[in-house]
Image 1 (spheres, rainbow, N blue to C red):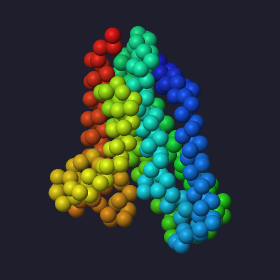
Image 2: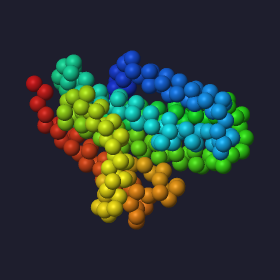
Image 3: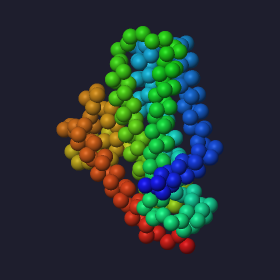
Image 4: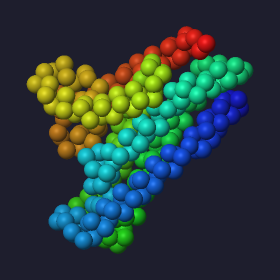
Length: 252
């Protein structure tokens, strides 16, 4: 356990030394600052409190969409850059199994995604408080927390998908491209195929759990429990493929 903790710390330090590490947090800060200024100037109807602002902007359909994109950018290079710079050979000669090494990379990628979610949530609340100074609104803090949970699940799913693509292709560009492309066209694909009941088994039909708060499910008959099970199955598949390929791949 101590050795594995060391791997986690090492992977986090490697990630934090990249220039892009803090850039992601800076981007979120700038985006929410711009939103706060825009809302202050425009004062749109229906948003008149901190919780309204925070709940509305953290949604996947709003500024929250930045979080999974930034998380995917980080997850894509977790393994691919080791191959690119040739450091994978030095990594695998350590007295640690390939499973532990890959697990540490995946866990750190997920933790980074979660820190982005928390950071976005904090910025949303702070920006909302600056604009409105509290006050009561139509949304509740339960709605806000629900959106955060949905954003976290969405981010982790696409981080896992991107992580697998990176291992399969060993290409940072391919992993980023496929990961972001999947986020962009997934909802469109589901919308086009929503008439078919089999669509509910697609990954993209289940990634946005916030739809269950508005009763706008993509395919009739879907439930929150159903989507959670489908996501767990897909993630188990992605991770199984990732670990199987990484274990057998020749690094020579």
